[in-house]
Length: 161
Length: 278
Image (tube, rainbow over all chains, first blue to last red; front, side, top):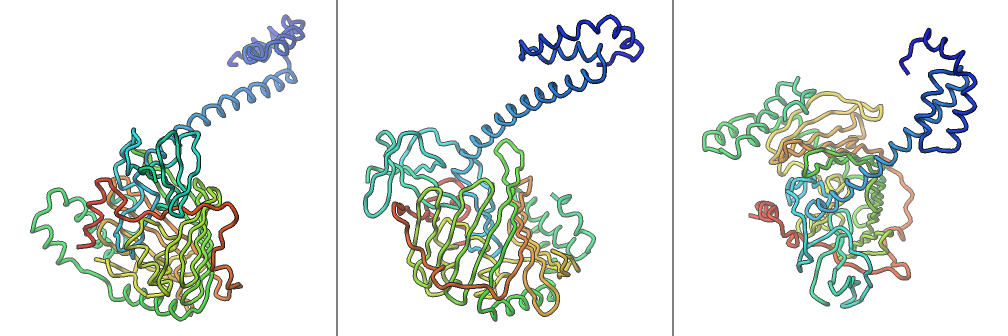
């Protein structure tokens, strides 16, 4: 990348015949595309450089996307824990409850399905059961009652209804 | 905590109000009688600010119907420290005194729809095919009072609605000033700042014959990073209203769920939260 133009010029004469090989390698082994392209970049003419740049950008973007997805997942997990307490509410100046602004509460991570504990999402494989006119969720023998809380549906662990 | 509010510090009166807020929130762990007395001596609420709020409240109470489109931002602080911001919109239709329909969308949450028809208040979360409802008092204002006292529910634009139905906004305020003229959505507004326990809040009220709230900004003082919540409002004073819009009809397959009551908040904050009930 940082090779000076003069050096590039001198190498170009030697490396021109290698272009075809380099491109073939690129096509055959996408995983190594970045390395192959870099070599080509240094040595070859403008057209080849452009192609190589495009490939490199693609690779970079893919990496970025992967990283972003990871981050999003992390945030989501954190939010799950937070929402246990926060329940998403900004209560304004008029609310009698006073200024219990979102995020005020120190988060406590619920680790066990204790009756009375609240979670933001259900474990997998739940079935809906009805009692007293309300819908409950039976998740492997632990019963959750969905409730509207803050600005979300949350789930409070209850005894079997 | 002061740097967040620097732009408004230029006004000396609000500066005092903000110092008041800073003093009260910082001094809490070592609160003494002297600091409390010092705070009590500080100038309280600028009568001009009170007048502006009352004028707005009086005007809102005259409105027989309106709709609001609000663009909102809400900060949320992660346990590890970072402060995040989420956007959202609220579409609200109000008919005095007993009709309300609200669609609330926050970027990171399921859409919630609120229906109130003078008898029942229902919230419907279509993504969860779930609705929760309570038997409600006869007016929007009394219903919101009930919700704010009893239920752990964050009612969209609740303050504006209470203003429109009750004209109240200042009952918890300890300091307030007129900051000056600010422009929201290209409209000249009176920009006011207030302080009360745990929060600073600002409001922009349209100048002229329609003293409508155009923006509200609430800053929490109970966290170091001071999360904020903002609402920028666009008003329609002659909305199309179909009375059926205020009544929720459960679709087939909808599940009825509970509505969280305040006592259900079991965490340590619950004890702090009840101090207002004294």
